[in-house]
Amino acid sequence: MNSKVLIIEDDIDLLSNFKEILEYNKMNVWTALNGREALEILEDIDFDVIISDISMPQLDGLSLLSTIKLRVGLENTPLILISGKISKEEQRFGIEQGADDYLVKPVSAKTLWNAVYSSLEKKKKREVWAKYRLDLALKEDRKITFHEFRTPLAGVLSIFELMETMLEDLDKAELLELIQVGRQSANRINESLNKLSVYNRLDTLTLAPSNFVFDLELFQKIAKDHYDKLTVIGWDSVNPISFDLKFFNYNIIEFIENALKFARLGSSIEVLYEGEVFCVSNQQDVFSEKGFYDPAPFSQINRAFIEQQGLGLGLYICKRIAHIQGVIFACEIEEDLRFKVTLDFRKA
Image (cartoon, rainbow, N blue to C red):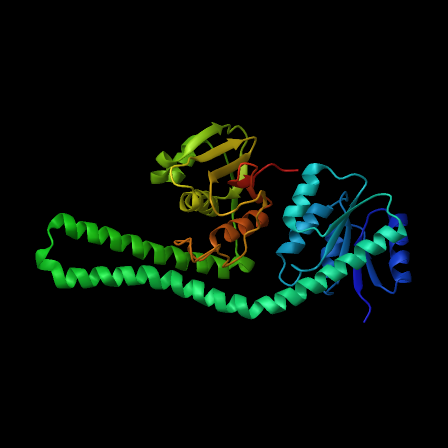
């Protein structure tokens, strides 16, 4: 069966040229003049490859890419971006969002075909890998979920047993200490259940963005007891940002708790808000090379040696919620191996 390709380009002559090249190579080709038109076509047809210009009216190529990668069933569809020139910011955003290739105009017939063929081959390899990983992932998800509930539940049950068998020997201070430990274990179970609930509702989640200024006072209020463990290295809150307040709090807390969980003992956790970009970074001993990190659901790193990781859902949920609201989310291991998580509220 011939592969199906969707081309999105607002230059009609160029669109026609690309279509002829791919049809000559036995591709079935559909065309659209902008991103919104493309999304309508994608409602009815599954494509093997999507090719999109970056600069277009109504919905540009980068926004289209973000939308496609969040749609169920389209996550593995290769998307090739084309532009007269590609800035470093556009390239970085495209990489973070999952673009498969970049082509700079003018694009020759050979270059276009090679890019499409390469994307099709990569898609096949991903599908083979995904099929291989599916059973392993399902088994591992069950292990992770079971472990995450079993461990704190065992703690709660142990405390009840201690209180039952040693109640007469415990003084008030010891009893309060046991209650506190039990509360922490119960909170861990509750947090895991809440994350599972949000994860299961991500595709149908209803958000209510509002405009507000993210000043230091608001951050202190959200961080609460964690604030004294953080080092604020800069804060500039001039322009208002737009985000669902409930999930804004969730994202900020998750950033902080993730840093606290994985920070190297005795190292600082740095917080910066500047130019409508918020980031939390910590020194860590998990990753040994610099680069970008893309959180995936139920993903945990070296579980045998790094405990208290939770379900492996927190940063993935943050990423999805940010993307839904048009905010750029990124995780990066920097040159000095600090792990940095970023929310970029700037609008293009």
